[in-house]
Length: 390
Image (cartoon, rainbow, N blue to C red; front, side, top):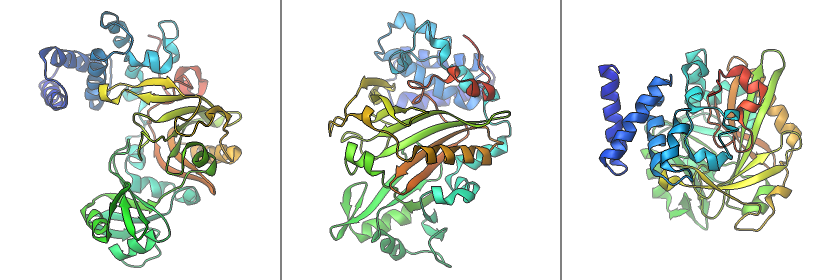
């Protein structure tokens, strides 16, 4: 390894050990996995991610004995996927190896295009032709200043403007960078007071939050469709993730869909313990194989079957995505609109009045989708990603 890489590895190791135990064995494993990522052609800015995930996986109880875990790691597979996916030594090549997923060959061929999706403000303008499918974006917040987007203003906004918007319904404040629910605030007016992420506050609390933010967007809160409110509870989320490919010959194709549903245990963000993940049949829109995810404390993803919602008892496999044809049409039109970025992952809220795109990514994770749609079993995925049998 070069001196620069050695220094980067030591810095990332130090950060990792600050958040876990700093035993010599854990440090040794971290270094081993960092080097394993480098040796297998992973893009350098993902070395630390591989090292962290595989080290956590090694020390966690994933159902695979430690003595057998090396077989999986050498093929770019953390062993939690054996339970999460149903992955075995017979079918593992149906799924994409982390070494291939994080290969430089599989990121956007034009590095400039990545900027379209890494920054939420840019994504909004890239999709300007599809604003009907996005939540209303009122303001961009820069160092506490409210810069108008779709607020109907010809001046900078004020906190009083935001309080006025809140009279019509909840709003969302989201960081323009990052994901997994980090930097997310839901603000609403209720019973003569205000709530931030369900915690009661007053006008001054809302104003203090607004003035503290930088590089944020302020949008309307997209309320999930009644089908999912009835199935999960009025305050629960329903977030759809789609994978689309723009094929050079056959045009836009949808290769996977998965719906994340909230429970009393999840709170407001959708990618953590207690969340229910359901496959969405690509022909009918019907939900199938609902799974409750857990394991965050161990740094892994584990699952329990969940045919019925744990709070309401509703049979989740009896549900079908509303307006499924319209959803397919929207996703394919956007895939064609952005054909120069041929692999897209979108997060979408199904609402009573249509679909609202929350986020789009040109290299979005598929590990939440692969329990339902093994990546390498779809021919269109294999036309845009270079993968190998391991």
